[in-house]
Image 1 (cartoon, rainbow, N blue to C red):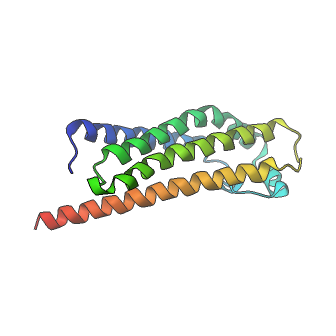
Image 2 (image 1 turned 30 degrees about the vertical axis):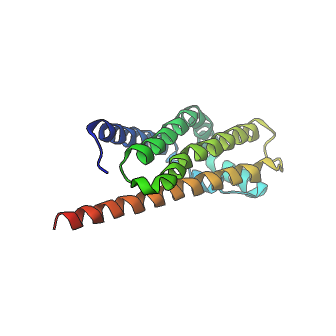
Image 3 (image 1 turned 120 degrees about the vertical axis):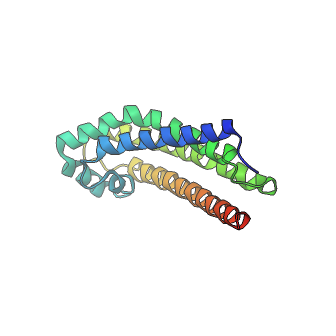
Length: 172
């Protein structure tokens, strides 16, 4: 099943906006060492606070300030995922169940991202160095978010490769 012009434009625009938004987030946090991913996957309170300390006041300020945009960004990637999965002409009619599941992967990831952000803001507002169950809960939300995003990328990558293979066979 091919894409009409309207669907193609929606997919291209959604991917373009997502790429710009993701690039902006990377630019906001690129100076953090260790990277934000280390903090997101930190289940242990002592390690969590050590990473924040390693960032220093400028890094922690950048981290705090990124949340204003990150809450907006999660809507962008959720919408992008829905648009790519539902309008990208990557799923044959007999694969409608897989298409439907795939279409909900990034919106579900965004729910975990939202929860992770709220938990992180709660931690940053509390006493520094506190041992809290919020830290592993936040890391769990992050792991689920990234797992769903990786699942989406895997399914879409597989479908794109399959589509290109079919196009290659048809052109022979």
